[in-house]
Image 1: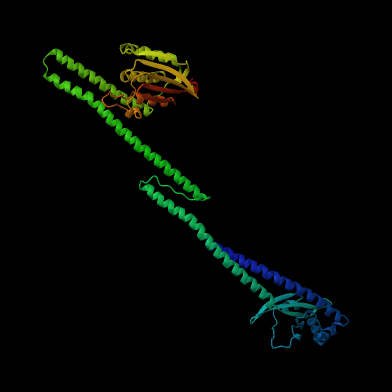
Image 2: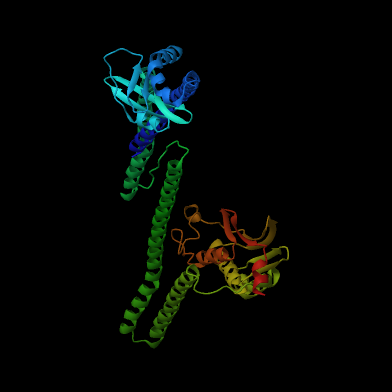
Length: 463
């Protein structure tokens, strides 16, 4: 299409330029002929001015050889003289080439200058005629015969040069189109190939093309899409693995109380002693409640992830919340001989009181159950726009094998009780607060850091 359009445009330009050039040459010749005719008319009229109207026709015929030769020699042109009846009076060229009376003679005999170009063999002849006036009456016609071979030779030379330039231009356009079409088609073909790879599951496919046009923008968009797809697929796979691990852990955790319930239920059938039956029933009730707690924790975690309930944010003094949690767990601290050491900075935080209370209870409960500590330290510090609450103990720490997965559901070290869903729920609650929970652990103790944002805009909006 580009080549066809270019060819059409060049063809139009060729004819326009050639026509303009030809018209300019012809205009120059015509101007020259007009000037010659005007001078010749004046000369003839001056020669015949002393004759009467009755004699002028006869004198024009008699003097025609003299007049024609003079004008012919002056302008170096073939000259013909006609009377007002369009009869040839004299021709300065005595040759076999006889020319007919064309429209130029007819117009000139009617007092109008006119010209016509005729082709004779390989020659092109310009016939220019103008009237001969005597006392405002047309008494004859003077015709200039001008061969235009040189002019048309120049025109033909220009035409050949224009054709050559057009041919060069078309070749250039063809090469240019080939280059640009390849520069467009090649990356598109490559893009198609890489798209097919992605369609077949190869999401690490990328295209590298250096370009400064829309193709480069398209390639960048494709690479960005491929990168996002790869991340999305990876996250899906990771989420699938987490779900599988979650189901495996939940299944394992639920299996223990169910096995105990079924075992004691079978035992009840065979027992006859009332005290033994009551003891088995107590085990069944205890394991049943533990099973119910696990199910409720799973449902609670699911609700947090799906935003099934709203968080009620308000301004809370952190000291008030910590004291409330410690008072609830104080009997257990005394039972296990754990000392609480507080050294934190008072701060007014925008939080959900009950949810953060649950986080603190989960963390302290894990310290009581798993760390075998004798002291728990509660401190704080500020970091950028965060208030950081630190809860640390002097216990045995967390097994290295599960340290990285401590916030996963029902993670446990070999031979120890599971951490359940407490830390998983705590992580989700902190995320809903735009905060973070971090853990460090060694054989000298475990440190949990709760980072609360100091931005209080959320509570002000609620007010």
